[in-house]
Image 1 (cartoon, one colour):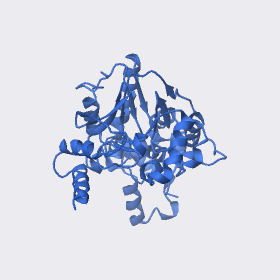
Image 2 (cartoon, rainbow, N blue to C red):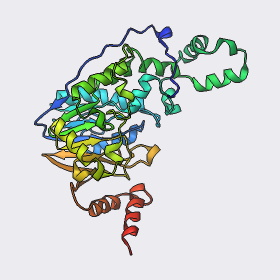
Image 3 (cartoon, rainbow, N blue to C red):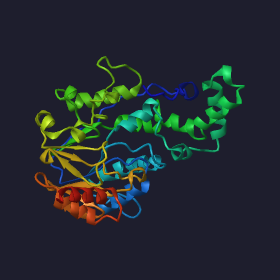
Image 4 (tube, one colour):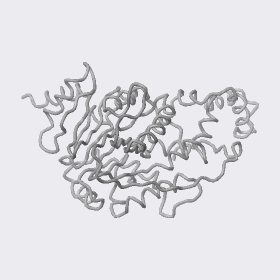
Amino acid sequence: MPRRAPTLLLLSLLASPCVARAQEVFTDVPRIVAVGDVHGDYQQFVTILRQLGVIDGRARWTGGRTHLVQTGDVPDRGPDSRKVMELLMSLADEAKAAGGRVHALVGNHEAMNVLGDLRYVDPGEYAAFRSSNSSKLQGRAWAVLSDSARRTDDTYKAQWYAEHPLGWVEHRLAFEGNGRYATWIRGNNAMVKINDYLFVHGGIGPKYVDSTMAAMNVGVRTALSGSTSPPEGNIAEDPEGPLWYRGLASADEPLLAAHVDSVLARFGVKHVVIGHTVTPGTIMPRFGGKVLMIDIGLSAAYGSALAALEVDAGTAYAVHRGTRLAIPLGGDLGTYLAAAAALDPAGTRLRQYVEQLSAAKTP
């Protein structure tokens, strides 16, 4: 198990968090747009939202009745997660007032931050929480959380302070207990069904195919509340659970085809939309379009690809660098991928992928 950040409840005296339930099924939605993993890249996120036509130049909602789904993994690997979360919060209110919705799903990295697994937190994340009180809070954390037997060891002290930089305490207070972002994350769904599309960060493994969306959403919230230990195990950390499962993205299609059909039938949908596993650089259909992968590597950490899913009047498109491309839901992907790659600058992952595919076909 990964090393957890120590709790700061002794410092914060936070109350036990509440576990709320949000609406998870929506019908008759005229337009859906979905963005995959953001990983702290605010500028890329804002750019794709503008290309989708759901925000203006001042980052205000212009999407009307559109439903925007962000499939999780806002934090880690980039410096501006806080700005992305604040934007999603403000857009949720603006969209609802206009007749639309914003669905920010829980990803494995949201869960990791709430549960204290900080392996992938970018230094800029902590810096974003710095305040005039940071030095004082850091000192209090040292007094409470450090090993009292080693406090005279200068090497240990230097390492401890490097691992708990200014802003670390504020970051932890925001992500645990009733902190602002902990509360927001627990209030979000792990899964949402819109028309005949099911949106989930990772996927649904065989272990959960007979479960319900409500049960899994409640299970994730309970696991992130820290107040109880679910008897069936922690779904928020389960490799087959909705935050971590990768089979829909990487398993051999013939071997998993029956499972995919079972998922579609169980949840009454025609398509499952997932993030979590990075594609070559654009929206990728699998299983004849029954699964759509939308983690295109948006953040600088993955090459700054720029694409998102749009479902308009029931038809699926990739909005790739501002250009709308119909997604083939069966057959050869070559023409679609070549069209997307042609929109990319030289040297991108997608261009390299398409070149490799072309080379493999050449006798």
